[in-house]
Length: 398
Image 1 (cartoon, rainbow, N blue to C red):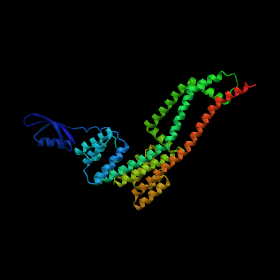
Image 2 (image 1 turned 90 degrees about the horizontal axis):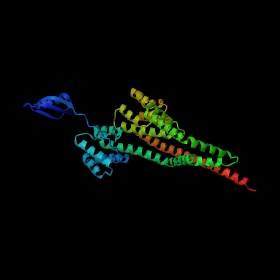
Image 3 (image 1 turned 90 degrees about the vertical axis):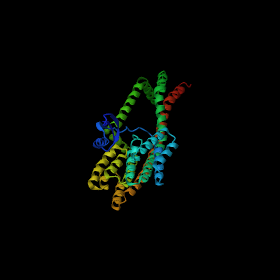
Image 4 (image 1 turned 180 degrees about the vertical axis):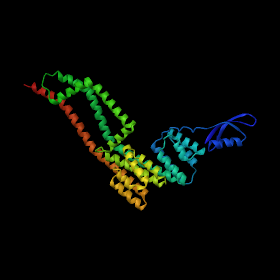
């Protein structure tokens, strides 16, 4: 710790400065030993962490390069300096410069990461800190790179699978809004001027056009307000997040993918924290928090309490009611054979593949459903427009 002081010298001159000491009592004793008479000694508050955002790919690159560098026996500061000179993004260069300055000042690498205000995940900081304590920082860095790379690969593959459905939904919503706000009101006026019995699709379209002209703006505002309120409740309140995450787990198509991805993150995180010799409570806390699902976290937190009470891992996980039997059986066998980290890594790979498979199944079912829905909407709109014209032309034929 650093302490800022004001003290008198023996000559009576007032001095100000900063002194390093483990505590306040030691700081005062050191000042007296130097011949000062302390007037005021107070701790210097630690600097506020800098908020720096770096890309996931940059974090993976950092972990992997530093892991290889330390394994080769090269100094950490030289590696950071080289990476900073080669970095392309300004934010990454800023983060590397901050780390370099802190390490040059005597901080550990894990503390330098933690001081960057959330740029690096707490899980990675804990793993690297444990690696530094055991002399295996290179292994911890490579482990963090593997963790983050697996998470990024799964996220990228899920996002790629959802591009086409998202595009179809976006185009459909744009077409629907355009039709309701601009096309339907004009068609309603046109058909209202026709003195003939209109078919049912046309009458429905006219009613929708009249309603959209009179109340469309209010309806859009109401829907936007409802969507905003729902998003606020499900993101800003704990019970709202749990309700949202519980609903995600029960979705008919995507629920299994959400569960498999959460189990993969839980298994991989627990495997690496156990392999890093973190305390059981901290390892489980990090693994539970890595699921990304607050409802699952709440159920696993109860299992964590039972594990810490000495009931093993497989039994409490089975009692949570959310962990598949395959997962529980594999953990039970691993506990008996003493291969928990290895089995957890295999389980993580299995459930990552399962999440990708479930996403493919969901998108395969969603794409034809969206296509049929779009085709039905276009067919209804065309019938509503064409049928009265066809009826009018047939009625004027001799």
